[in-house]
Amino acid sequence: PIDKYRKVIEAAAKLLEYYPKSRWVDDTLLLMGIAYFRLQDYSRAERKFTELMTIYPNSGHVPEAVIWKARTLVEQGKHDDATKLLTETAPSLKNRHHRGQVEFLLAKTEFDQKHWDEAATHFKLALDLLPASEDRFEAIYRYGLSEFERKQFKDAADAFSEVARQTRNGARA
Image (tube, rainbow, N blue to C red; front, side):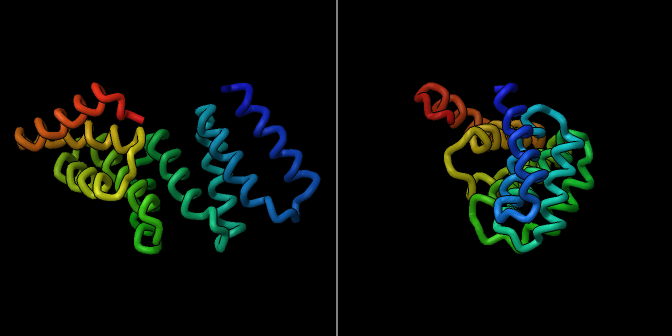
């Protein structure tokens, strides 16, 4: 997969170089950002998402760019920046999946900082919004861990039972 991401970046860079006014520039910036993220080149990923959000604020890809930028910030340990970005953006999101992603990232940020009450609250909200996916599976598991840390053992056990059930049934995305 690494070679594929590099090829995406090369092709996208050519498109931006030769067709800077193309209607596909915002799509290209998003793809480049995701490819850089997958390659763990977080500073370049962050730049591409920021470019998209700044140059094309009315693009339909802005909500995705915000979510990916927040993921990038979280990976870089910039929890406060990620939280600020997500909380400023959340009220404008109409798409249920995007709102679920925001709640999931807010939860991960709180979880990483050991803010168990806030993490549990955001994971619970994310679970109400996320479809079946790897993120939903992780949200259930981390919700259980958060509840365990909060000494809410019944809720933790219920979450862990759900993780075990999904693992046994092959339901994990």
